[in-house]
Amino acid sequence: MTTMRKLALMSSLMIGLTGCGHVSAKHPGSSPSNKSTAPRISISLPAPSLATTHPVQYLDQYNQYAMAQFLRQNRGSIPGVATTGFLAGTFTLPALNGPLLHRYGGPPIPPTPAAAGIHLSFPTSGTIQGVSRFVAGTYSVLHRAGEFPNLSASVFQAGVVAAARGVMLSESNDPAAAFLAMLGPSTLNGQTESQQVAQGLQTDYGPHGFGANRTYVYTAWVTMAAPPTHLLTTPIVQEPDWGAEGAALPKGFPSPTLMTLENAMTLHAVFSQKYSAAGKTVLLIDNVSVPITQMTMAYVPGHTHPGQWVVFSEQFGTPHYAWEYTVPATRDKA
Image (cartoon, rainbow, N blue to C red; front, side, top):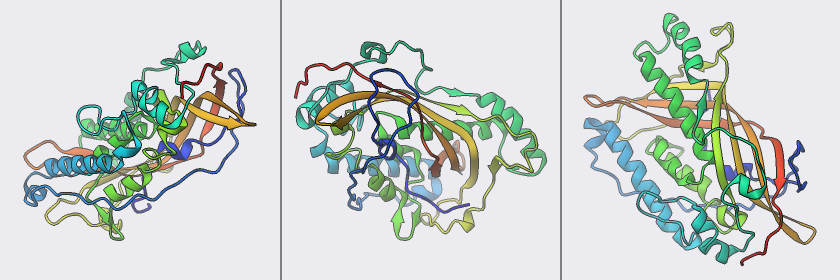
């Protein structure tokens, strides 16, 4: 079991591809990525008493404050992207094809894959396939073995669903929402998880991120693995010890129950990105699958209120590009 790791985000998957002009099964090549270092965000903390009396409320407020301050710091790089309200941090098509297009150049992004010339069907964005089968094949075995003795099947399933949703945030048009899904106030090596998330997101919201790269996610979904035949000899779910993680929580905050899912799910997405080669700039639409090699969730008890699952750490495997499509050229509006 590893300690807390910086959130792996969509920008880490945005590696250069070779345009092919049609749907194909070509493998992507790599290109240098542009990275920047985020300043450590200063977070206005909720009332300390909430950490003891209402830990879930404390966590929600902490994460909200962290996201709001991150977006305020980066608003100069994301014209057209709201920094407050329901769409805070979201790269909408009007923003990408409006202010961000004028700031960073084109080409414009088609509103749908069909509008780009791709006539294929995809799962609805946010779909989690195989959850019931996964839970049915794992929880009863783990429970009989004494794992997660205090968690019901419904709470266990809620953790699996929260893990899949957390993974999909890495392939979404609102990557800043990652703040809301994390154990933000936990600290490792003097840096909170919110600060680590901010550093991972800085590229996405900077001059080399979503706007400049013409990134727009049409759909993202998760498929759960089938539980192994011998679940306890081939572990797919572990219950690690919080005390061994080396991370600190605010005074009075309860120690969470941890659950690690290993090779339990795969993330899929269809998204656009800009590609430049031989003096030409084109827009690609890609279909990528990424195995999630490890996802550790933390269940924060709510005392008299419902508890809540949040992401503690995640590790992505090697992306596999099923196909790529070069969008027919249109006049660049920049």
